[in-house]
Image (tube, rainbow, N blue to C red; front, side, top):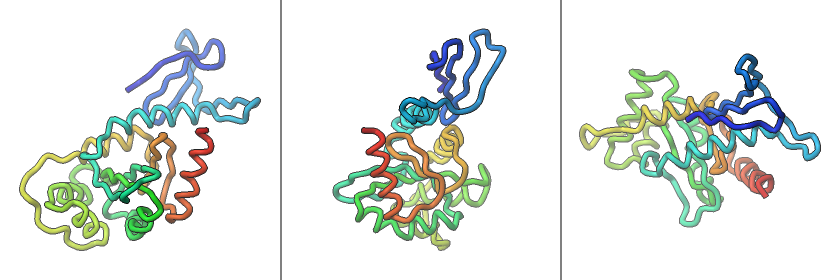
Length: 204
């Protein structure tokens, strides 16, 4: 979804498409790719706009198109784009109980990096079509057989893969907060919670 609006600089329009924001002159002849800073307040306005656009896209991804690991009472929610063959995704998932203990709800969305037709893609679809997706995802990420499927089924793998690209994914795991902020790569539980807490402070 592409959104066009006036930028804070007269004569420039802002065009946002997922995680990408560019600025274009009124006549469409010139385009500028870069960040605009509010020097009076020390804010990166472009980064905030990226986060707003990502937030809207993530809100459109329901829990039932992800594999959810959640504590009884969640303080934070993150959407984690994962590849079952990624070693850093394995490191993240090996600590899923600790993320949950610290109040983090994790929504896993599939992002098999090699793309359609790859072994990672097939495994992601197998996980989704399993009777117990949590157990199947854990097995697949740990490199063991995710088990038998409950039969042919429609999967969200293509949708979440395309969504990850639109959001500007740079690698897996790709972590997105519920405010649309992007955290690239594995973060240990305590560090991730500190980053989420800092994000709350910035929002305030």
